[in-house]
Image 1 (tube, helix red, strand yellow):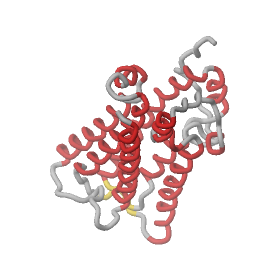
Image 2 (cartoon, one colour):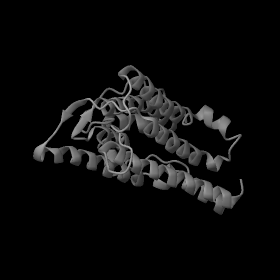
Image 3 (cartoon, helix red, strand yellow):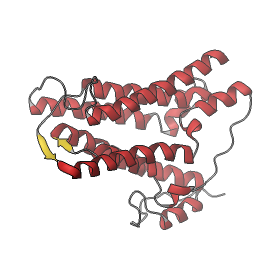
Image 4 (cartoon, helix red, strand yellow):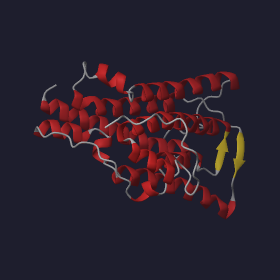
Length: 252
């Protein structure tokens, strides 16, 4: 892949992901002029559940598969190494878009907050959005979305080696981005059966993904990360859970 094409590819993946993320915010909150989570023609509950769970499974399957080191080793024989992250970002945007596009409405109301208390739900949602974006910049926003890898290749500068750091929010919880996403999923004054199915399915996927990510981080950073696990909770500030199931660090 030539350099101008590589730059265009990375920029396209970045824009697509941000568009899908912005659309998702409106999808959850029922913003006018876009398809919201409760919009569409109703079908039977059984069919709606099967389709919706299948959509979340597709998103989660490819999102997890492409994050595995074994898959990356195979995949980078097909795509340039520097484009691997951008490809990951692009497929995430496309499968998230597919899930929202084909989501089957299940509009049965489970709870509906009214009056001044409605703002509490919107605050939870807003805090989730802010923390999610903030967290990406606390580590390396541009590396997370594949732009730094492409820029380094374009300027023929090597990528810096990963270093273990715990800036700001990462001293409160080990995974502030995932915590923020859960707040976004559940921060609504009007919870329907379909919204709850989406929120719970994605939360389950987040927890499964974190189990694998924690193991990868222990392998990469060894005792530093194990010490971090013991000091800082995974998702809930102030709650320290047993580490459990972490693999032994590689010998130095």
